[in-house]
Image (cartoon, rainbow, N blue to C red; front, side, top):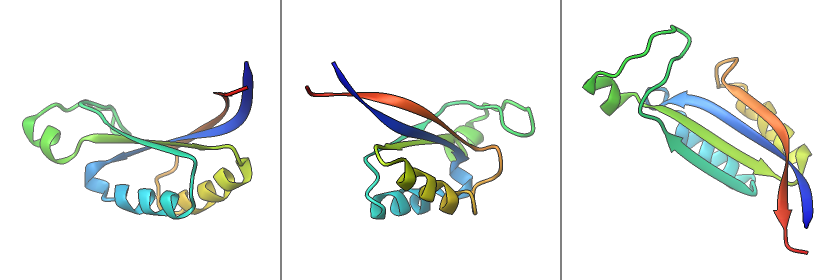
Length: 102
């Protein structure tokens, strides 16, 4: 089994932040290898409160943006750009491996 090292990033935002398209456009233009967006049905944020009202569920769902690339320098450049408009503590990243064909 052959593997390659990658760097994975996870960003936590909400729909109300209106940052999703800005993030996706930047990563798409930068030709990031992989990108997924997940919409949550609940979340506990900085306030520590969990809210599940119908209004919250329809207008301000938590969103997770996850991306990776084989080129760690590209990911680090993306992090330098993204951290300028994403709240501190809302971006995490880690080293990982991906299985590739032999």
